[in-house]
Length: 116
Image (cartoon, rainbow, N blue to C red; front, top):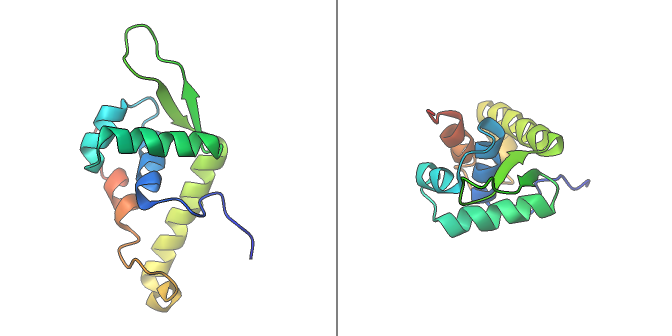
């Protein structure tokens, strides 16, 4: 079986990737507040995603306290593919038999419904 770019990531990593895919440059404090995470969890997830090549990190401008993140093309594509697979699987419950977490759609509905 072929490994995917998202293999081994935590659900919070997917939420962080989704946030920076939808709103590049959003401050990590805002992502943390909207995703109900702690700031250090967002930063840790963002670093893990940068290491995997799924997020870009840009240095902080002088007027901002933290660096800026945005999804790479690979990150955005992998997340879009996973989101589509989850939507298809939601119509076919037997396709979800291998998943331990039946709330697999939660990260996607959360960032998709954010109002900025």
